[in-house]
Amino acid sequence: MNAVAVEEQALDVYSTLVSTVAEQASPSVVAIRTSTGEKTRGSGSGFALTPDGLILTNSHIIYGAKLIRVETTQSPSVS
Image (tube, rainbow, N blue to C red; front, side, top):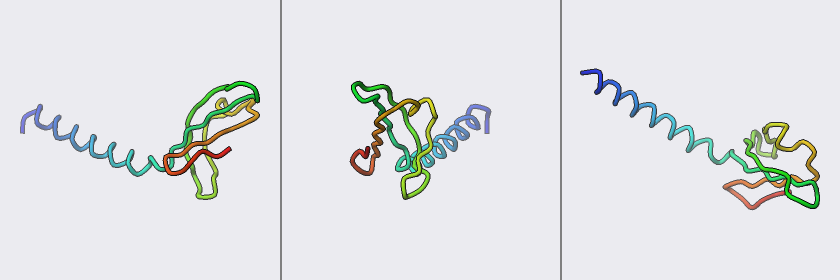
């Protein structure tokens, strides 16, 4: 097997792995939107770690927010 064929095979394996991980993790990914009350402050993303709603995100996403809205691909948004 030449170097190009080996590289193509490795890329196929890597692509399959990334696709599988993304497919399995996507239900846990959430979109987060925050506001200070009167105006939208920012947005970011996070991961739902537990079924009861524990979410992991960066602190700068929610710091100072008065309202935090979380949207999932599995259900409507929750405030």
